[in-house]
Image (cartoon, rainbow, N blue to C red; front, top):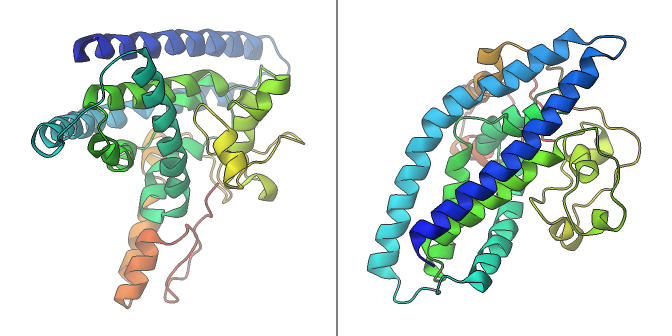
Length: 291
């Protein structure tokens, strides 16, 4: 297989899951239209979720294009050997990228500078297929940083990006309330039930179930929580805006205020890399905790 073949494979996987997610979204819309009471606000929220693709794609093309070029340059100049491209290394790349995604996702919840972006994904009070594409504009930056070591381990850049795309594409179908628990699969895969927990702002659901494709990483590293009662979705703080511009940059104003209130370099460090919710003592307002 060639890098071009891998690129086509990744695009086909993305298209397949996008079509599945689109089908689920269509069913959700039809169900909502015929349900009582009719929740018109949920449709506006869907539009807001879709609107996040405007800044996200604009920035993502630049970040991931620059990252791929950087990966290729590093591989050609600083890596003496690379894995061959075959079915086994493709599967290995997906598995390793899924493992990396777990930690990337976990740090996006634990480092506030990245939470300012990832919080966009968690800011909806609804849970539907449209939320699957609700992203902060700079989320791709964290992904590019965390997957960089794979190049030095000998993974061709094309395999790394195919793995990243596969892990993200898989998650399109799990953003729904239409699908209940899936039996034995709940212990292995990230399912709609497992991911509903991740989007819950109930105390016992916060910072749980970070997995992309596999949920076994959460079981191994102590962040697993089964779905019990139906979660309350969204941020822990009071946030329910459907204004696209407010949603795109929902965490940035408070983040900048807290940076401005930092009185020492230690304060600056904790604002940037501390858990969301920590503030310099000078600050008079409260920010949310990570979900």
